[in-house]
Amino acid sequence: MSDRRYSRADLKGPLPDAHFIYGAYRHAAARETFATVDPSTEETLTSVARGRAADIDLAVEAAHGAQRGDWRQITPAERGRLMFKLADALEADAERFALMETLDVGKPVKESLGDVRGVCATIRYNAGAADKMEGTTIPLGPSFIDFTMLEPVGVTAHIVPWNYPLGMVARSVAPALAAGCTAVVKPAEQSPLTALAFAELCHKVGFPKGVVNVVAGYGEEAGAALVAHPKVRGITFTGSVATGRKIYMNAAQGLKPAVLELGGKNPMIVLDDADLERAAFDAIDGAFGNSGQVCSSSSRLLLQHNIAEEFLERLAENARKLGVGPGLDNLDLGPLVSKEQYDKVQSYLASGRAAGARMRHGGGRPAALARGYFIEPTIIDHVDAGSALAREEIFGPVAVAQVFDKVEEAVELANGLGYGLVSGVYSRDISRAFKLARDLEAGSVWINGWFIGGVQAPTGGIKDSGIGRERGLPGIRNYLSIKNVGIRL
Ligand code: NAI
Ligand code: MG
Image 1 (cartoon, rainbow, N blue to C red):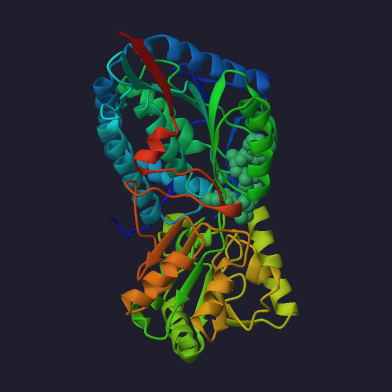
Image 2: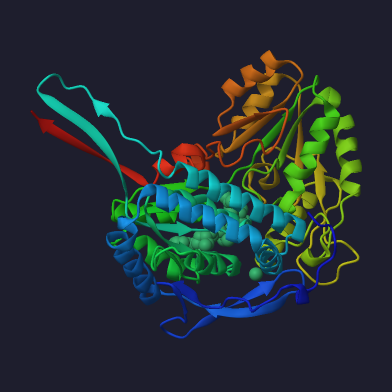
């Protein structure tokens, strides 16, 4: 991993600017485009094809044709082999992908490179599982044989957000491919570039035409048309709760299963017997990594009263060391993805200030940066527990601290919101931590560490944080349907 500075000239080759359908780049049927912006400079990077229902129809038909045709003829082991080839090709091309990602969403190049490595790991995990998804035999007695076959659900839709543009494509497309499905991806309008290049790479390593297609464009246009298309048989979405609800309702019209990953306001509970150095170290990456634009960020710090002050001092000291700047400068924090996201975070900060919250560190735009959607790493306490700052997902580099007295209060605070994605506990007493793990309402509980897991460990939310699980073997089962075969002897 390189900490050096990069320049735009380090990106060899052009930026992709068209849909990728049936093995080729294609302009939008209506010839319309939209601008994708570099949030470090606020300048337009390029204009990209703006997809609508006609483009979606072309892509879904391509995926449907491949599902019934070439892709079906390929053995699971051969699917896996193609996926290993894809991971190798991506690894060899990691710098180009990372630079495209950095230009499109602003994250430091070292983070983008880390994301690409994570994508390679995701593809390889799923590649290895492609020929290991087995059915069962069911004992019905001497007169019958009964067994299940796991079959690909068919054409799958992948509606992807902008915080890990390539990572989120791979998180759902890799298991779909392992299961034998075909895919149509709709990347976020803020970050279409790496998804398009990814589809081209799939084609280059030998995936049959139509297996992986990408249609760029807006959610209400391309996204909604994809969800509604009658030949789409499964939907995976990551993004906001409001859009997740819309997609789920639209999916219901076609009785399509949907996996929804909808973010959180994740509590990091620090008990008075915790390793404070460790917790304050983890909270830096947890709250400020990817400029806080992470569904599983440690955005809520719940601190036991007798260690709260010491913890916040350590955290602020760590935060002071963080560098903020353009993604190509490769410091610790890049800008937020868009003006919209920047304005949203600034308005949370303003409302907190107006209500008397205290900025322990940061609190706005770094003085040295005049352009770009930058926000300093920000630590806030004295926050009203009923306020938006304390209850809503901010999706920026903002950690909100609240203090509790008894452990039961921490559980009540942790479980008290609509969200249920991740809850974390820091304590040296494993029994204490484990009791909390049982009481916390969340899809994941992390003890004495943050961002624990990887492609092997299933993740997802309960309550408003979503439906279903991604990653691990459950992540592949999302794309398999069970067929029961019964034979009378
Ligand atoms: P969004 O949920 O509206 O967008 C995510 C994806 O859904 C994009 O590809 C978008 O084009 C698509 N989409 C939007 N409306 C659609 C529709 N009606 N049908 C089909 N697809 C549709 O999120 P947005 O507006 O970009 O960000 C708003 C907030 O959402 C953020 O501030 C953050 O709090 C949260 N968010 C959470 C993420 C997570 O990882 N869970 C990722 C991105 C955003
Ligand atoms: Mg962009």
